[in-house]
Amino acid sequence: MLTEQDLKQIKQKGISEEKLNNQLEQFKTGFPFLRLEAAAAIGKGIMAPTAEERQQYVNAWNQYKAEGRRVVKFVPASGAASRMFKDMFAFVDASYDVPTTDFEKHYFDNIQKFAFYDALNAACQKNLGKDIPTLLAEGQYKAVAAQMLKAEGLNYGQLPKGLLLFHNYPEGPRTPMEEHLVEGALYAASNGEAHVHFTVSHEHMELFKQKVAEKADLYARKYGIKYDITFSEQKPSTDTVAANADNTPFRNDDGTLLFRPGGHGALIENLNEIEADVIFVKNIDNVVPDRLKDDTVEWKQVIAGVLVTLQQKAFEYLRLIDTGKYSHEQIEEMIRFVQQDLCCRKHDIKDLEDAELVIYLRKKLNRPMRVCGVVKNVGEPGGGPFLTYNQDGTVSLQILESSQIDKSNKEYMDMFTKGTHFNPVDLVCAVKDYKGQPFNLPEYVDKTTGFISSKSKSGKELKALELPGLWNGAMSDWSTVFVEVPLSTFNPVKTVNDLLREQHQ
Image (cartoon, rainbow, N blue to C red; front, side):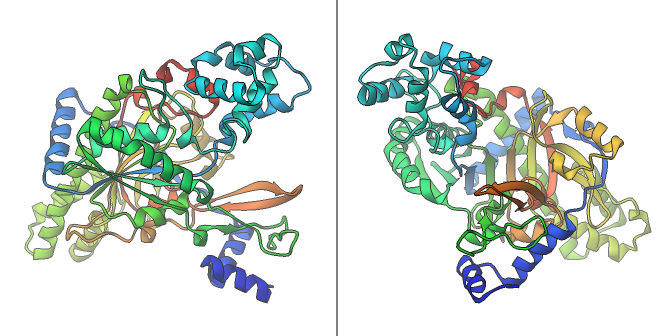
């Protein structure tokens, strides 16, 4: 039962009583597992363009940009990098004083290779009166690690990933935020302007804006463009209520309801507010130094070229449908396009009357479109590309996480574990219809997808609800196409030691 205080609290967050009750109901019912047809593979939902085709797609993309289109690079950059330093926090709190695990030894053996080494060394000298080599010689390993993590030092345990020093350059180290500005100039700039949008958590917003203000002019001069850099926060109205084990609302010590961020799926609201024809989406930590950017730039242009080529065709068919003057052959051609190019099939399509068929085709053609780069599966944790049954009985391409798959179904688990490809979050999205009007993206979310996980607060167990993921259920009803991209375009940084990989040196 909600109290007056509860109603006031949810009103302040912009959450309706109905929405809150729906969330509590979802804790009781859970989310249905998805019905799978197969893991996507080359020739079965995944394109592998030849060198000649790749050049055609790059040309199509450059032609599209030359027409004065508005292109935006959207970078989810929320949250602190604390998980990246989990092993080093454990070391600082450990009962032993010298590096003992392989992870700890690797970190300290290679400490000079980190792009943040000079900054960490300066912090050690300022706060401890000694440089890193001296401290390590004295066995003060924990003191050095603490200077990296704690607020009096670099504060890396609390800062967002986007503002950590990742890569070394002769002119000084760069953050992932800067690497994304460079990428924006190299493949997303049109009309001499690069539009880059970062989603940032509230507590880091000012720091992010300050860093961008410091650095943007440098890259604008270097690449001869202007930057338009914007920011947004995850909306409080997309937070979800936490529940107790019995599915009643979990309450804080002061009696208020506990709300938690609804996961990256909440960002569909932020994406919906971006004014653009085409939007690139890529995670903040998937960046490489300039010497390795060529592959990234080429393949970003390839997947964008695939997108605008398919969109152009879909628009032609929609305009033809609007005239009402189309032949049976043209309808057959549209069916082939939806089935083969957009990988969306309806098993009983032959049973539809002509009028129903046109309504069906129009619905599948007139919706947001995304092309996703996928890489060969190398055992990284995360989602993969599948052919999945939708609410309307059609089968189409989706990116799925393991939590959406019924673990007791051996056939499905085989598909998941033996899938040939992996989702590196490498998307390019077309978000306007054939009349130039923006789609309302929340209308295309599959609300029956989501995740329930176990968390704790102040030592008490709770159940947390995550919204359909941004590239999972939040884009479920989009036209989706997969393109195989090389592994060289996927270099995420999940732990601090990932920065020691050759790709980040």
